[in-house]
Image 1 (cartoon, helix red, strand yellow):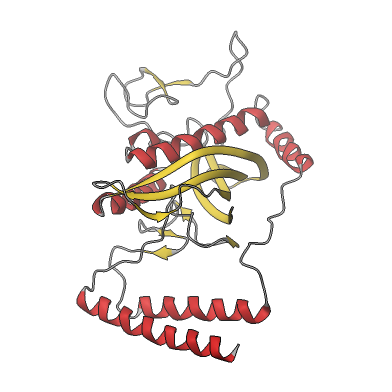
Image 2 (image 1 turned 180 degrees about the vertical axis):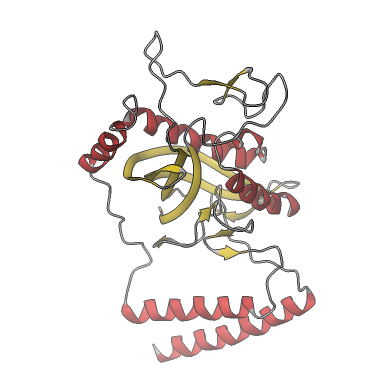
Length: 307
């Protein structure tokens, strides 16, 4: 054990020296997590905690679990601090004898999810738990596909403006590096309503989402895998916050029993289907706001387990 601790200590010193050399050579060097599902919540290491989350209340810079970035770049000492923290974390885990697998995240009881839906129906009679589950499941799959194809435009109508812009900038990091994040074999394991509350402007609905994905990154030119493993699956648990403006109601079911989702463009009054496009086909204005429907405003990574 003493020999192992001495080795890790020497490794920590060596990594600090390398980090100082690299940051001196290029002050604009950034730390990137890998691999990277939409939002950089996937990673090489399993976890079970509440890491930094996307959220639309930020000043425009974005953060993500496993790393950080801001408009001003990362100060030179930052990588050294991160390396030291990670190594001390590893050493402390070894001393405690803890396993590398994360602690299981408690599931939302069905009764709690149903009670949240009942709470919403007090102000929105046509709201259904099943429809929200379907909406979230579809959004997750569409978001991963848009991230993989690096075509983020279809997400305009599904996300708040700030969240859309933050994740678009993050995706550009992959484009700049000439990499493509592959997210395959997507399966939605569960969607549960956790909490509903209102503030002065919005209805806020917290949702627990558990999925299974294969997550790895390839070089755009060669197709070689640069991070992740296409043969290993990850079980991901997220907490999403969906919002809409206070007073917005779920439309009554149509003739065929389906919810009517079409709205009128606030700029020209023409009909627009927010499930298909965020751009009005008549006046070409971007229509993206929670006053029409539930949109995603916040994503928090809760846990990851790789098998």
